[in-house]
Image (tube, rainbow, N blue to C red; front, side, top):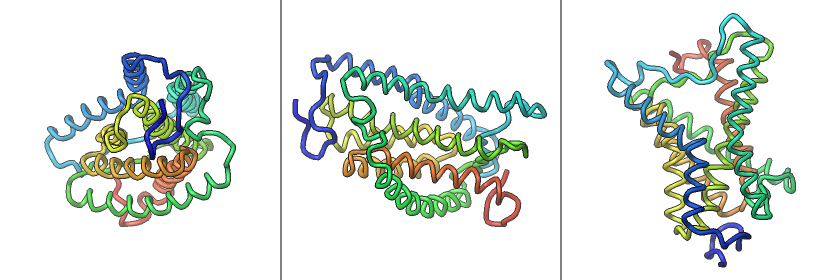
Length: 266
């Protein structure tokens, strides 16, 4: 079956797989990764919404300490959390390899490092400035919790772990929510617009723990990323852009929190 015009990757090996099997595969991959995160995020949002007080008076904390006061054990837990979160990416790589393609089918390889880097930097610059402005407006409007990107102790591994965490988030989300999901929805003959909606709503949903602003902002970002993936046929630039955005958020917060008046803190 030839892919429709405007879709990525043309024909697909292993097309004899039944649609029912593909749908089950997608559900399993999402249930082991960001689909489960979406459900958890929804429950967290309901809890925040029904708690006395406004959303902006509550905090959504990321990258915290597992064992305060025990830095080496804490480091072990941090590294375990980062690596174990990438297991679904390994599963996707295995599934795509069984097709005879691997991750190169979605443009996550080292064949075009400099174009991927350049495009990623440009995307991060555009989305980063708009995203920060939207977040500040959402906080003031009461639609968002105060996001605390990091609350790690001041130890030597703090910034390396924050950078690794940013990279893990980026690889997990872009490989699964963009590259893998769109490839499978194309195989299931979803229209490009329906696939875009599914990917972007999923991205927004697992950020719902941040509030309505987090949902909307990430859904819009998701739609932009899908359009860029359709244009370039590669998740590489998106991984670069997402990594830079998260590094800016995590490291920037660590350096600026409490030192500038415009940055909300819990």
